[in-house]
Image (cartoon, rainbow, N blue to C red):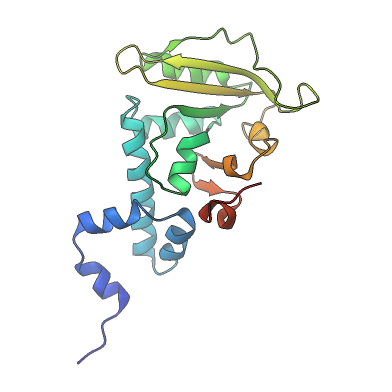
Length: 199
């Protein structure tokens, strides 16, 4: 009896089963899977985008326009949504967090307003400092937007620098050091996150 390779066995699985498997894999395992071949890498990327698309649909956003805006505004998706993509669980994020550089914040908020979101918090007031030394968290402001029909909430966390990532790397927990950019999915501490450990 001939020995069948993993690739041959995988090809015989129904598409629904493959997607179901991928919806449960942490990013670390998805990356290992993608090393197998180019075809597997493309399937892994498709599954990650599908996972993100499922989350964004609840917010009345489509993955294509979100990726365009992330690219145009040098913005990233962070928070519980990024954590859910990196380390899937049964928890559904109850809001969507975007990290945005100060130079692109108005453009990104305009994109969300075009998607019928309404600003709920005056963007001139920043959040209370989470550090003992005020201003060291690199957050200039947090703008909360609400969709009137779906009642979904989006937070735009405006960085005080020209990099959207400054608040992320100045946070106090390795759990939040995950983000989705226009070009990739990132996890800064994949082992700790996959083991649900953090500092």
